[in-house]
Length: 514
Picture: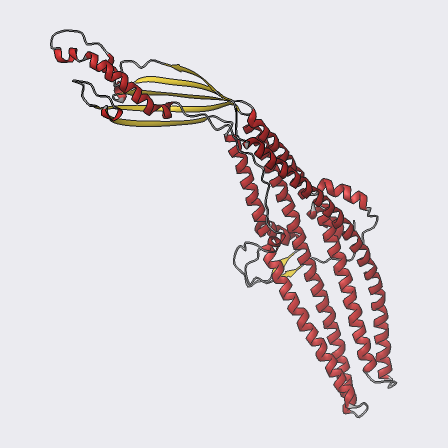
């Protein structure tokens, strides 16, 4: 049902059809034939005005906006976390080796990491959706200038009169006009605006969560490189020991004190350690490529890490306290809550389509045979629209919104369980890694003592160098266990920092042992 209130200002003599409606007084120079045609002019003027009104109504009386406003039931679809291992590289490679601290790597990644860039783009799109929803509640103003040249055929409309021309015109006129459309009341559009605002807030929180994921990816890569460097250092120490052993075995064999088997065994051990060094250096180079990709370094840029990750155990951690803090700090959890709230508002917007809407349209302009002979005219139209029957469309929108709410609620519940799992899993890894480090350190001390005694036995001629080689392999194994324990302990700190939210701040605190 539509109720329309219209105020029209009469079209005065400036109108191009005014001469058809105006009586012509008798006087000198007046054509009598024109006087006789006055009834004809009256008929033609009425018809021409109706035709002109039909032509002009779409411009002077813009239709009210559709009552059905868009119901934003969709959520934010962000990229896979794999994108946080890629980047949009910037700059060109330099021959100078780059000194890279952990904070430097994080700062670079926040500017170039692909996952971060994708989430920022999604945030911009969400803000654009909010502005689009806001535009439905704001006035819409436009202006137009038109020049008309018109000729009307009466025969097309089935009008045939004796002594009446079948064609009227041509006649021309100009029209300069401004139009304004103002929504007076649209509750659906208002609710859509609130829903889009919540989606925009969720997008911003997702950007914050993307920052946490970037820090996690960079810190993991950085810690991995530190572990690779430690392995290389240990293997080089093993090579140094193997070289001493091989030189001793060669000298003793040349002096006839030991068989050739001891010399060969020492050479095999040296080559084995050298092979391990090649593998460790290759793994370091590959892990540096992975980190370089994540932080947007140009292709071929070499760098060296400047920070260390010393072993500092964390004590006094309580799972329930950490979980309470995580639910408040995790940006992805708060983003999920905002998306759920947006879906609930969208459900309200769907139901609000049954409410009436009010709309005001107005235009003002000059119209006449030319702009110099024009006169102002205006139209103001108020429209109230009420939905009487929609064929089940509103119910369908509500059902879709209900399904979206249920999906968002389930996703939020799953995310809460995921946070619980991540916090508890990180705590278990921290505890286990700390125990591994303690045992590995004790075992390294024992392996060093065993190697020292084995070398003394060989120097004293009590046994051959097999015991030394076995002791050296045992020491290499215990050193690897120690490095793995330290690496897993630092990875657990990174995982706990991510699980707690505000990863950058939490990581600094955890790496410091607090």
